[in-house]
Amino acid sequence: MNQPPDITELQALPLAELMHQALATKLARRGTSFSLCSIINAKSGRCSEDCHFCAQSAHYQTEAPVYPLLNTDQILKGAREAKKTGASRFSLVTSGRGLANDDLTEILEIIRAIRKEVGIKVCASLGILGESELGQLKEAGVSRYHHNLETSREFFPQVCTTHSFNDRIATIRAAQNVGLSVCSGGIFGLGESEADRLSMAMSLVECGIDSVPINVLIPLPGTPCAGLPPLPISEILRAISLYRLILPRAAIRLAAGRESALADFLSSAFMAGADGMMIGGYLTQRGRSPEADLQFAEEIKQLWSI
Image (cartoon, rainbow, N blue to C red; front, side, top):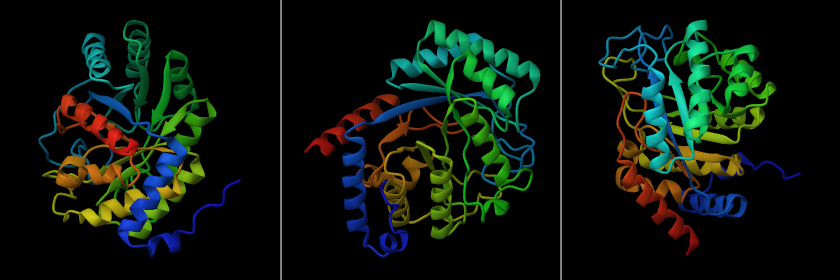
């Protein structure tokens, strides 16, 4: 069995050497694979939880849209668009701590319709759930459950007080217990330290996570995180490199904030070990066009092959 890397030694490396090792690890362990996924904000706003970065929390005055669960036709349209633009996975995301029974029943029907009529892999991000609900999702056709840790165990109370880090771990374990793959990561730039980012990475290792979305904070007006300063690009690239070296076999997907946080250095993130993206926009923010992302992905794969 491979020994885990010495994190202290990795932290001491210059950024260029760290990125070099991360890219070499990515290509050795995962080849030139580049995965694309897409989400739909299937139910928005009025969330009971107080996650300090989230515009959908009912605790804050923001301009986030508020609407109930979208109907089957609306979500099927989103799934078809995701498949057409090259996404291999399509995730249903709902606001709220968990799911009401009526929403769960409807979502199960929607998942069955997506699998039957669109044929794209279905993921779900529906909050804190137990094995019963997660088992029903798997039976309906969900293959992967998304549930971010968001940050480290130590820093989590500074980010959310209405549920705990242990609540998130319990949902991840419940999803795994019913046979679902789990996608879990977090947000850089919440005011955490590098030690917090590494602590979250080690929690992901302990949970056996093989798909890690990395978001970089978009400081949304009205949220407690609105005034936080942006992370330096060098810190973001160091963190991505360290995650690749700590999680050598995982898909590392860049999601919300990648465009604004990395700007002209976006391609550098993929030379630091990242190998996937969320395309087609995020929960309350638009991203680049899917066409631009698809072209970008092809260009990165060409660079990897040189």
